[in-house]
Length: 309
Image 1 (cartoon, rainbow, N blue to C red):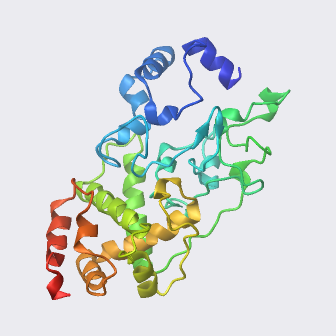
Image 2: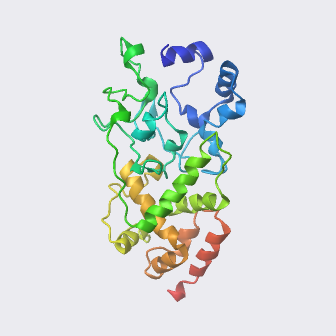
Image 3: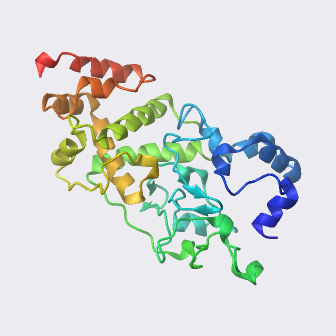
């Protein structure tokens, strides 16, 4: 049965599924019906949704707007104009049936620590974003020819694409990113009694603030240029504008995550240097960060007196 036909039969034609981010919204009428029809515990069904990340990856779920660290799909009817779904080709090969992991929707996750490779966010052949709900569209013999791990646009088997080596600016940066990725991946597995540590949750919160500072167009804020100079890496962002990290492609995000990791490795001294070189101001670090962790606020208070610069 085709995906659209299946949804019409189960949920009714009046309930729209594919013209919205169903994993993010996960309305109760979908979850309840899936639990009832499959004989699955409601808690297990809920664990497959992005709503289950509330309180860890992001603070509060909301129906619209940017959701911190959750990749945007940029939906237009049933199409996906963005690159919101990532994948690891090797992970797709594992098991009898390929499936896409919910952790691949997290913007911070740009690598697969299990297979030590980069995640991909599009078809390497036709450059189209992933929309696995459309793999049966326009295919006459779809039962035999379509698979969830095929590119819906050109038919390429995504699980057969070559693995891409991880690019790293330093071993310390890679270890920090890899450690946090491993925690996120373990916490995303429904079969494991594991949750993100309080430290990891706070690190993601501060990291998101740093991501905001790195892409800011404020004239008096030059943190991005400063960090690139300190790391001696080329300025990579093609659009240093208001495009949030959740709407950027994999290479830009991986670049940004590495800059964030470098700062987080020694946040107090790195921010102190940036502040003294006038790459960032006290007001920038405090602005629009009402839920800032105490340890972050303690660091930032050191920069409240501009006379010490």
